[in-house]
Image: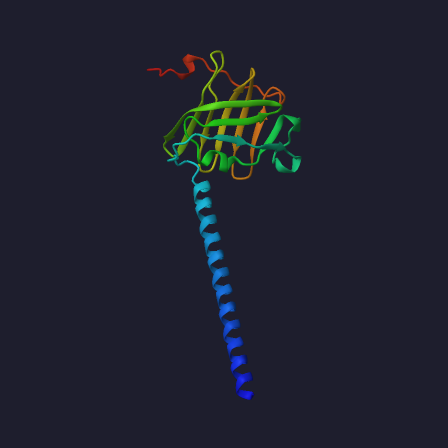
Length: 191
């Protein structure tokens, strides 16, 4: 009887040890897989200036939310003229010509096809299609600072991203004067 109890106890200990060992290995593998996936996503997001290899077109949604005074480092008179961009890095990391950029701009739905995505030095320059009577919208995506100018519904919206914050300003509500340039401003003058 003692031998039978001893053998049963020994078998139970081995089975428990085997099950416990398998669950530890499974947890370790899951943790390693999660770390690997998060590292890949982080590397892709951190390098906003690289061009995408993707060939299928997709809709890209730039999500905005109200901004608070605590978010801003400078004093602003009209907080309603500024919205914080929540998903800037995810939106502009993987973008190709033909994608559709969607932004809910202060009640208006900006929806334009991406015309071009080019690399210039350390920056990625993105332009959108435009209507016949409006200017192109553009974005310059850099590693540290990014900016853009959006033309929609006769209004101009400015996008800015630095290390702390990404936001869009409605220039007509913020009482900002947007400089207008003529062809002479862009010409090369010889002295």
